[in-house]
Length: 183
Image (cartoon, rainbow, N blue to C red):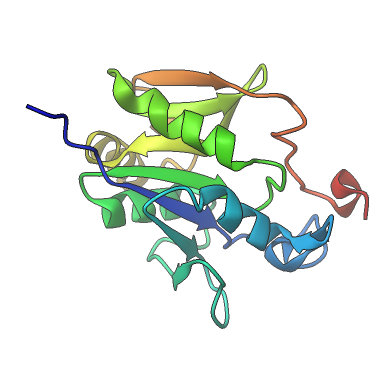
């Protein structure tokens, strides 16, 4: 009897205000492509890709969707993604990680083959917005924390079993300011 493959959907988080960056990160060009295009491309190895946030117009290679928990940090949109994913796996990538590639995304999804509820990219510290989540096991824990007022992903996820996926610091550059990407 064969193993049933779990559906794996990709979600690009693109809802932040980009206040430190000074303009919409999703549309900022890095090495010839927008950070949004780069994130969609990284997730393109999965079953589907959805851009989550208040975006206007179509996004090539992805569907677009706005969840119901915008405006209080990334935990709310993460919960929205996990709820939308149902019983599958959700690989979540914030659009301001322009150097995450398809290989790292594949390694994150594969890391959930054991008992882990979440697999996080790690370059010496975990990156909570570059991870694969077993939706059916993680969403209840995160939703309960959200409903109690928690807004920090790492505190909300304290009870979840984690797998660590090593990555190079260059892959996990988080572009919070234009200078981070040479602009």
